[in-house]
Amino acid sequence: MSDDVLSVGTTGGGVTPKTAYHHGDLRAQLIAAVRDLVETHGPDGFSVAEAARRAGVSSAAPYKHFKDRDEILRCVAAEAMDRLYAAMAAASDPYPAGSHEAVAAIGQAYVDFAKAQPGVFRLVFGLTDGHENAPELQQKGDRCFGVVVAHVATRRNAPEDDPDVLSYAYILWSFVHGHSFLAIDMKHHDVGTEIDDWAFLMRVSRAILAS
Amino acid sequence: MSDDVLSVGTTGGGVTPKTAYHHGDLRAQLIAAVRDLVETHGPDGFSVAEAARRAGVSSAAPYKHFKDRDEILRCVAAEAMDRLYAAMAAASDPYPAGSHEAVAAIGQAYVDFAKAQPGVFRLVFGLTDGHENAPELQQKGDRCFGVVVAHVATRRNAPEDDPDVLSYAYILWSFVHGHSFLAIDMKHHDVGTEIDDWAFLMRVSRAILAS
DNA sequence: AACAGAAGTTAGCATCGCTCACATTGGTTT
DNA sequence: AAACCAATGTGAGCGATGCTAACTTCTGTT
Image 1 (tube, rainbow over the protein chains, first blue to last red):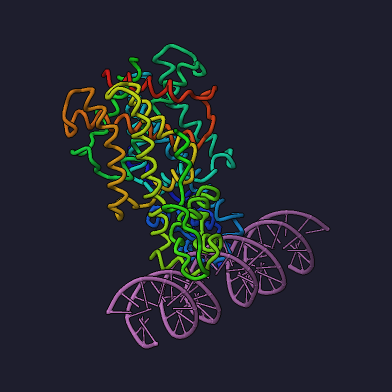
Image 2: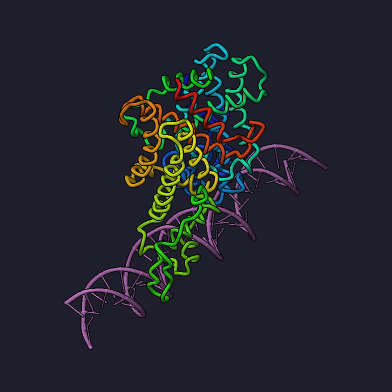
């Protein structure tokens, strides 16, 4: 269930290359290739040429589907954010709305995603001016934030646009976001023993929401 | 006082280019040029060639001082981390050791740094496997973390290597780190009004350290 | 004054991003 | 069914980049 962060699935059901030209799946195959490359070689160490090579196509072909190198990255980021949203929503599902467990579960899904795909995670949140120039990404990000907001609103018995609710949610998100980055940057770090994510998340959820 | 994050200073006192060859300042001038480029064009949109051009030397010259493109970036990151450390240490100075104000001030310095130089900030914490392959950066990062740890240790009357102290400090750092990234990624964001950093930091400091 | 090495230069290779002109294909129109 | 057209592929090619190699020039030591 939490593994489906990794499963991506083929475009929409076993679409197999039919002919050399027009194999119909290129766009999706390119995105998949780029996701792999970003994951293994880092967000910068990716090249359109290499992605094309992996898809078995000439180095000019990608530009029939994407305007830019950047547009490819934005698409990968968008697809990743969709998966992140799904993971967050699903994670909180089993727990009562507004419970500490629900909040912690959302955070756990976030951290898991970062740890499972650090390259893509960094891409999603590291795109220079990515969010400003890409309303789609901005919006998908907001949708993720909304998952947290909903639970906080329930807990505090207030509407989702209540300033208090938003600021509590933002604080929680800051923590999870920061912890995710720190976790993938400096794996074990100075905090002696390995960090127990769940315990951390519950602890923070309680400390913040009780304040 | 908080502006000195921006001042970088020349290498070590007005060293002026003396002749066309061997102008003696190249290494520092390159680092400065790269810092500028990273800041204006993002961490990826920087090229060694452009940096060389700005320093008025041939595109091969930089390789007499740096092995790699990556090594230049690491140097810029290292220099930036030194400035970050200085800013953090200085910021907490006016306040009593272990006070909420001291902790908040450290966080404020961190956030200010990120906002003032988002490009460099992203570089410092976005270097793919940068920390694993660069013990120097790892160590400089630890030194920054140490500033927080020291105050938490004082407040809790415990040694700096106490697991509790470390975990409190880590949680605080996660917040500040996450908030910094969010602040530079999505400038005003959904949280309606502009965020008051200081209030935010004090609030977190109190909520966490009281738990 | 001679020399060794540090620190520049030019030339050049492979790769990359991206564009252009052309080839192929599949679906739509008559 | 034939003709056409837009979508999607190919290959050649331009300019920029990262990095190396061989050469030159400057500087400090003996």
